[in-house]
Image (cartoon, rainbow, N blue to C red; front, side, top):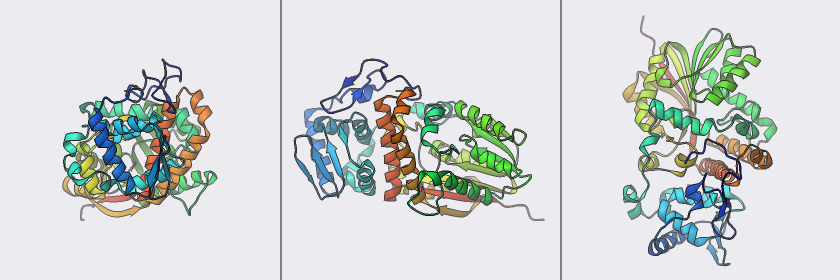
Amino acid sequence: MRTAEPRSADAGQTVTVSPGTAAVDPARWPDVASQPSASRARTAVTAAVVRRALRRLPLHVRFADGTSFGKGGPALDVHDPKAFHGRIGSQGLVGFGESYMAGEWDAPDPVAVLTVLAANAAELIPAHLQRLRGLWAPRRPHAQRNTPDGSRTNISRHYDLSNDLFALFLDGTLTYSSALFRGFPSDWDLLAAAQHRKINRLLDLADVQEGTKVLEIGTGWGELAIRAAARGAHVTSLTLSREQRDLARERVAAAGLTDRVSVELCDYREARGMYDAVVSVEMIEAVGAEFWPVYFRTLDERLVPGGRAVLQAITMPHERMLASRNTFTWIQKYIFPGGLLPSVEAVAETVRDHTRLAITRRDAYGAHYAETLRLWRERFTERTNEITALGFDETFRRMWTFYLAYSEAGFRSGYLDVQQYLLTKEAPAR
């Protein structure tokens, strides 16, 4: 299924999976519109395993027939138990997300429910089933490998959805990465300032100033490049998204900085030249474990001796990364094809084994990402009519609501974190 091509909400016949669930366009969302063909026995076993797991958690699980259980806490409403258990039994966590997209379960506060689940992720599946993960978990499609051609396709499916869509829920800086706040809770009016605070900190770590030659891997919509150029730096920024490149170039021109910023449609592996600083913000998540050594060697090879590389990276626990790195997740299927979050240990090992760089500083601030995501999610929810007007249907909106809530919950639970790294390249002795 390809989600990067927005279709109108009435593009094809819509079906309702069961009473109380969402209308789904089977042409656009085939795996959501059709219920899995799991056997009655498998569904029954899954129902027993899922209910046993949920009973141990601080949740209040409510079913359509009026039955409920749990230890209290946020409510999880299962509208279609048969479909809910069938999808999980057939597709695991991919099925759990698809069940939400289909409207088979919901929650008054999805972030609260998903935070409980994320905090208990390692214990949700019994140990004996965890050991057999390779047998039951879906495998990542070969087509999602982040080869140069594969990366272009993977990046396009997310970032070329629509610049107008991203503009609806991002602040005016169009910065699609964690902000850095002064305190919590924050509000929408302070988000742009918090994004600038984050960008300034990255540029300070990289020692970007008048005359600095900067390579940016992952353009976004150009805000970091513009702020670096405003300091007097000369920036070469690389992206694989045509939508991002075109709008970033417009924004650079509007800022009067075309003589200092070049935005290129270029894979990081194709970068050439030498730079005083390399900056890459939440780009490594799209690289894939197979290519982490190549990515970090690129940072090394593009830096002059004495240069600095600064990264912002989302990380997950090392054990969970090892357990899931070869399996196919809901996020990979619907949001970030080819994506994989590294662990702190994986970054350290790759830098040590494949480069001449040294990690000289690492700062974590996951709570700031949870706050950033809350503001994005609330803004996304407020803009439902405008999202519909762009041609995105209800299933898409539920998918992105789940994605934003799922991500926020990851940071609130501590399952996910975000790091800023400073990597240095020693200058030769004189």
